[in-house]
Image (tube, rainbow, N blue to C red; front, side, top):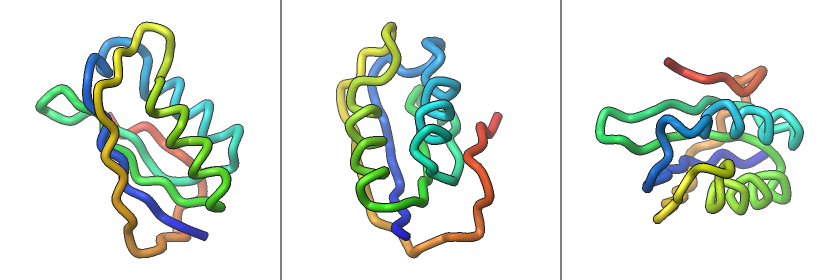
Length: 90
């Protein structure tokens, strides 16, 4: 299992990014969390198989239909297999 931190920038708040990302993560068997940041970005921590995380990253670079993603920064993190699901932090 691998854990990655994502910082997604652009028009990513108010476009159902977190809800859509949760659906995608659930479909891919990824655990972790996603949240809005105070500066208008979206941040996520995701744990899963490398192929699933690559698919999640590709999805994050597009996002849902109304999103306009301008940048995605992906940083490896220490493996965190303690997550049991993928949740939206409010």
